[in-house]
Length: 399
Figure 1: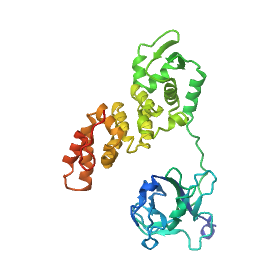
Figure 2: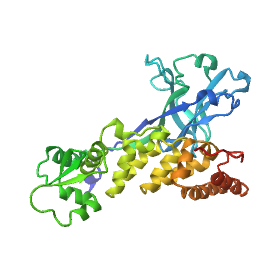
Figure 3: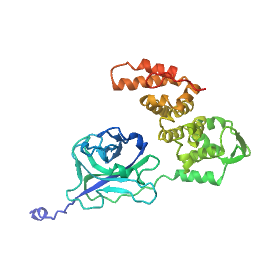
């Protein structure tokens, strides 16, 4: 029997497709205190935090006195640098100096949406940069709408070029995002089936014992006796209504309330402990809401500065915010001379003297990272104990 027909049977063709595209990401770099940065020297820069795009880390470098010695500080320079290991990383870039007058006349240098004669820019290794030595004439910049309140804002977009082979496959089935928070949120808003009332400074909030007990060990302990019978009322005397409302929103929806006053904290050092975020941190500590505590820590961490770090440290210590406390200690140790001169440090010495020893340990750890010598520890201890400044001089205590 012949098998010729079997050998000549048609073979179904196969196919594949190579897709080259960019993975895009953006970062905003705010330079506060531009006038103080001037004079740091040609070729010296201020760097943004590293940000990740396309699997690589990047950073923005701003040179207030310019990068090119030949320009004798006539221009400011701006570059985007590859901040992680990588070889021949191909990318598109966009740098935007933001017009802060509201007129929208931003200064934009972009690879995007224009013909690329030689293709994307290639960065050969870590530290390779793309940008402009003559980004803007300094004299013009200082009288322009780009500089406001001694502050510059630079937006950066990076598009990392990636290639992949796309082969035919079965259609995917899209799964909707979880909506459990929305459903529980409606339960809170409609008050359907509520069996407990919280009276907070005269404002009443209806809630559900089972939901609260499931989310908070403290509520579970409080409700272990059941509070059977009619809807009962609990008075909360140590919290503001708007803070309690924000806490309930989180308990039911697992997200922070979409309120600008809650979602961000103040950068004013004297009022860090008075922000709603700080008070929400206190509520999270009171009711043992671990995820809410971490969310508050994350928001407060973004606002840490020389003037606010001492109060933020005290706040973190009081409400067992261990992650925030670690960040504050590290930041204070790395910026010790300036922190010692801040009003916040005076507050720390008066309200939380025990934290000074923890700060000393953090300073010792930073010094150990930087060098093998230990010569600074004694002078640091003198500063922390006696109130000296960065040069070891005595500072008169405030009364």
